Length: 151
Image (cartoon, rainbow, N blue to C red; front, side):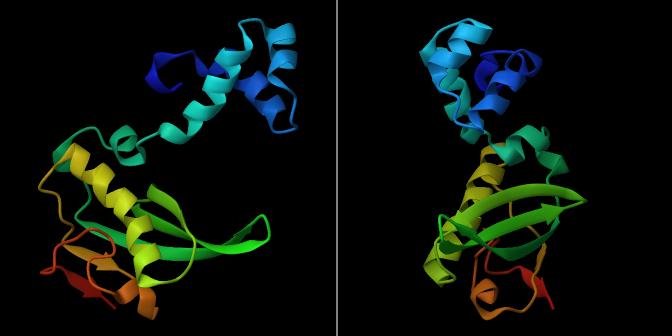
């Protein structure tokens, strides 16, 4: 688990029950620990740095990326899941509230920030997109303005 708070196999069943809204006091009664422990375990699931967890060495950051948005809904509202992938591996996945340049740039910026935490000078050589206009805008994936886009 993040920050070495527990072993995954020790908390997986309790966190699975949270999917069905089992209260923290119920988890404490069945699995031990305390209510705050289970709350923190659940909250920690969203703190992963996907790039830093997946790519340990700066030289292994991919030179070529693929980015695309998947349309989805959350609580009845339409969102766009900005995905960044390379070498058969998901490197970024962030929700954007809209398909605007601002929202997509912010969503893809999460990948860019995480990649730069591994290598501050990182800039992909090319970024493959599906030619959808909002995705085509400059620097969405965190690359430099000199990068080439494969179409």
